[in-house]
Length: 355
Image (cartoon, rainbow, N blue to C red):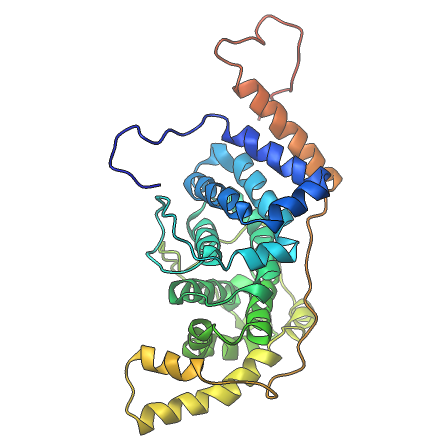
């Protein structure tokens, strides 16, 4: 809650422990998970998680907290009820440095994720796949996305589909596949009510045409000389083996031909001429009038057969277990430094490696 009274809202000091407890309870006890998802109480948990994610995105000491928060949301997003619950209007205004918007909890989630991706610490780049997977999982159920949110999603696609970015890393193209899947899900399953996103797609149609005409020869793609620090360009993560990544024509060909552009290109083929015609005939210049036209339109029978909804559920693995064990012992140590109960004892929680 926002308040003008000093010290009327106090932050608890053990929120990380509570997040870990909630994550593990949902992971180990599916009945508890389903109970949480059956009620709107899940939104009362979602908002604080998003608050801590947004607040911690630039703090390298909070990378562990960021992982836990994203893992919780990935676990929740694997269930249909979570996506449906997100359509509830967001009225509780928690103070966050986000664009002003009027919308639902899905808008809030996507806007926080956009902030993390564009303005977060570089050490958060390994979470990008998880973050976009969460949006993919909820996308078939999202209704009435706000214009602000639609613009931010388009900004991510525009940045990630830049040719030099696609070939700069061996896995960067995965991010484009996730975003295209998000757009396809909304078009196929929630076209009615999402005129803002459809308008953004039409307005930025050059991005999709650029993807469909992407050159297969990496030698034809030049890296920009100057990168702006405004969020319009994404920093490139180093390759996993620490060596210099050299893309090949064969590598580009393997994923370029699989880009899921058919639904979006069909939408553009049908709607762009209609929008251009009505703009000329009625001399429209206000985007709200175009959005009203799109709200009254339909693509029934014009799009490809809807693809099955694919939910990517959280899957525990050995790497996650090792990371979690280290993170938990780190919390135990940090919570007991004053007084320093571990000093002058034989208890060894971990070793500090000298670089």
